Length: 110
Length: 117
Image 1 (tube, chains in turn orange, green):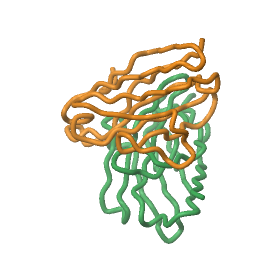
Image 2 (image 1 turned 120 degrees about the vertical axis):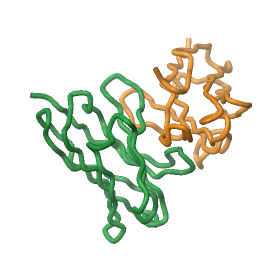
Image 3 (image 1 turned 180 degrees about the vertical axis):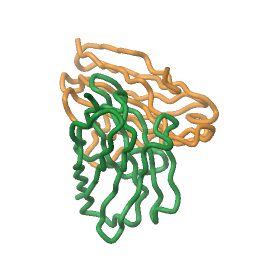
Image 4 (image 1 turned 90 degrees about the vertical axis):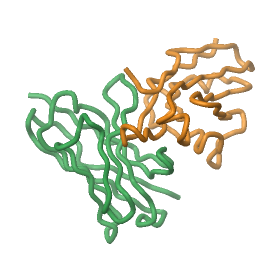
């Protein structure tokens, strides 16, 4: 049971938009920065979003992050077949004094 | 360009030990908090441990406390994870990374640890 709750899967057609939610609590999402990671099949995870809504250089603006209260959201617009991957949210939990990840969401492009 | 290269993984029997290393280059290693994350085969990401810039502060997941020890050598730009009393459930790919406000900024390619008799 992950501290952060993500939907197991989301799907949409090419060119459409998907959103992935990450629900936590006041000890993690509510008062800490959230990051989002993409893991393509068989590869190393890649950081897509850090500090809630910032993109590392090289990450297209089709990927965006937001946060409200104890929930964070990753949005992917203009969905491409190359976006099929597992996506994880992550943050620090001040009660656990440990980092935490969501259980991951598989994105399928129909 | 940030480069992180893990080594030291392999097959070990339950109860055994391994020492993972992560060689860093392309950035000022001593300025960054560092982190270990693991991923069991077919499973999700799990946070393991982190260490501050001079090694004076460390934190661990409950599942590894007392068995795994994170350390760093800033003179050699190297991060370590000493793994003792290993269990089957420690089997995973171990990734090192730079840490930024609780998140992983840069990732290594990972090293596989298999605990089995």
